[in-house]
Structure formats: C-alpha cells, structure tokens
Image: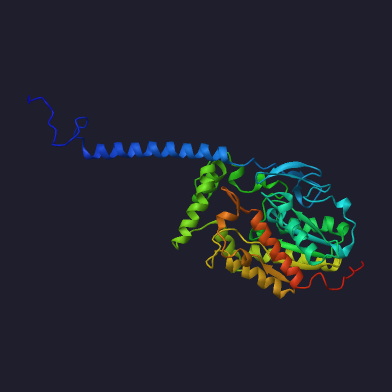
Length: 372
C-alpha cells in the first residue's frame, strides 16, 4: 500500500471514509429533515385528496338576530355531505307543509350537531327521533322540526326560536346543548367561516403557541388530522394538555363568566318557550365524540349543565351515557372531523326519545300561551 493510499479498517465499506463526528451527525440530521419534509408533503397531498368537499359558506342575514344562515331552497355541502334547505333555510320538510297542530310539533334548537353536519337528512337525529316517536305513538302524526344551524350559539338559537316558534306552534322545544354554545363571537354578523377564530381572518402566522396551532390547523390537512391523534395519545398517557375542550370544561366547572351569561340566555329561552309558546321544554346534552370512557374529559362540564336543568325544572338527558363504551373514531364523520356520523346520531335520537317518552313530556296537557 502506497503512502498516499487511504487506510480502511477491516470490514469497512470501500465507499465510506472517516468523517468528523460533528459533520457525520449534521449529515444525518439533514437527511432526517429532508425525509421528514418529504413524508409531511406526501401526507399533506394524500389527505387533501381524501378530504371531503369544502363546506358551503353561510349567508349574512342583516335583518335577522340570527345574523347568518342558509337561504330557502338552497343546495350545498356540510361536512362533505350534500344537503338541501326547506322554504325557511333549514333542513327538513317545508314549514308550509306543517299544519301547525300544536300537539304534533317538536322543535329542536341547536348548532351543527342538531343540523346533522356530515350526515344525510334522514340520518340526522331530529329525523331519526321523529321515526322513533312514530313507533311509540302510532296514533299521532308527530313532526320534529330542526331549527338548527352550524355555528349557532345559544343567543342565535333563542333568536331562531323567536323567529319561527310562533309560526310553528310547538308542543315541545328540545334544546340540543353542546358545550361550545357558550362561545360568543366578536362578530356575530359574519358567518363562522370568516369569524370562527382570530387566525381565520389573519393572512399571516400568529407566533403565540395556541394561535400558531390554530393557524396550522386552518392551513394544513395533515395538522388537522394529527392533532386529535396526539391529544388522544396524551390523554392515554395521562398527560395534562390544554385544548379548546379543556378550556370549555374549566369555564363550566369554575362557573365562569361565559357560562353564567349563557345560563341567563338559556333561562330566556326556557321562559319564552313556556310563556309565549305554551310549550314544554326539554334539554339534551350533546357530547363530544372523544375518549368515550369513564375518563371522558368534558364529563364534569356535562354535570354542570344537568345541574342547571334540574334546578330550573327542565327535564334533561345526558346523551354521553349512550355513547359510553363506544370507540370514538368509529363514530366520526371522517378522518378530520369528530362530528357524529349516522350511528352517533342514532344514539342521540335514542337519548332524546327516552327523555320524551319516559319523562311523559308528550302526555302532559297542552298549555295555552299567556296573552299580552
């Protein structure tokens, strides 16, 4: 071997040479980074191809306290599923076809869960509830009408009841209550597509940790897919993590200002239904479809809502009890969205049916609304 020939250690591949350890680690880091970026790009492209059809934007309603909604006889997409609105801009049969017989009309007020986000009309829980009640009361033509819209908070639900309740003359008003109904947007005039978060309208990236996550979720299908999985793993490892849900739970458990304000709005809703419409009132707690075990994160918040209902004489059911023990992912509408699918809506319909039937809410005498 000549003096200038490189020396190779026994068994060392002839294509490698000694490198400083620092440089070797750097090259490995570069290779790992490039591989991770390529994997993320492939994942993002794949998930974008698998993603459902984007939601159809809601229209601003400048002359309504509801602020936004869908027009009448409108076709669009919500949660990747096509839907068509009735003459009033909601899902279901035209209001003009409802005869107004008070004993036969149940109004469901709520948000995207009561709307049936991500499921067909016939699979949304108000429609399934109507079918269930038809079996329980074969002699009555019971109509269940969903006055629900994705993104509505409790104030908008009350406005909806005031706008359409007198026309429909319900026998019963069922409040489909979700924990995020306490959220009051800074600009209720705008549909949630533009006003759901500070970052949605922000063209740049907000570098505060929570806002950075929101920014990433708005822009990346991969992040939107991974965040629920990471949260589930953290919960399984008993790690304390802060999410939008944990913030909501704290608001209820601590009897925070947003929950206190929302209780006042709920009391207005209950009073309006009872005194102005002469209707019975029931409440169903609509659960989040995550970790459907005894360690369900929002369980204590549901208890606060149930306690509120009991203290004001409102029959209520916690639909989480019907979800308990199911695998959460099997009840999602798709990989990106934990709204309940048709099976989840069937569970909610059963909970609502049990509340109305076992509680005898359809058997009590009809009350006449107070005259002015």
